[in-house]
Length: 182
Image 1 (cartoon, rainbow, N blue to C red):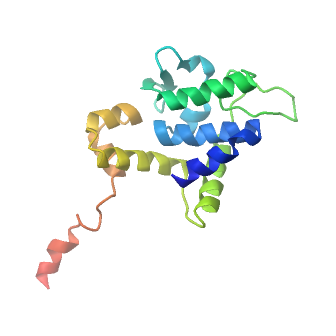
Image 2: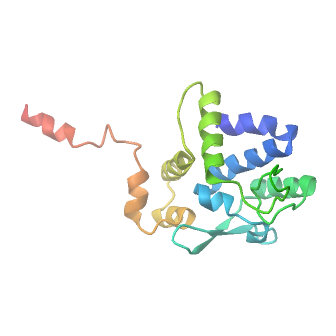
Image 3: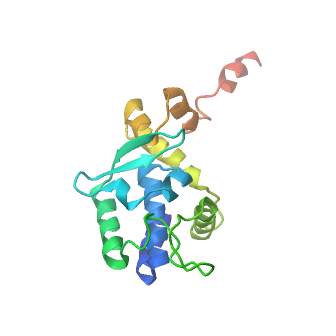
């Protein structure tokens, strides 16, 4: 993916660039919602079992595996910048109070994604939620079963997963059957 490659090249420039690269990776690989991403704490990551305990929409937790390459990024970030805050995705400085005891705002993640995608893809538009949609469609293309996708995304039903699947809307369309009337 162009966006991940672009962010990877910039990650060593600053703590902010590295944090933002990790945010894009988490949105892509773990299909997180913005509030799930910014609410992620260091204590939610289990480096031994390669997992993350995600506080999700609806007020429940879901346990997700964290791929080893994403875990290595987290460890590299932690080794390089420490745990200055309980939240993984926190501001790197706070001019108002000087304290870094809060998560990034979800609007920051929205702006990060929309601006980065627009610039990297020369005008294409995407939101953080686009990463969830892409995750589902790629998983379906890879013949992942619905239960695996539901476990990853936290959706309650297969119907919700199908809602995000727009891969074949031209081919699988009732218009083709209606054309027989003409």
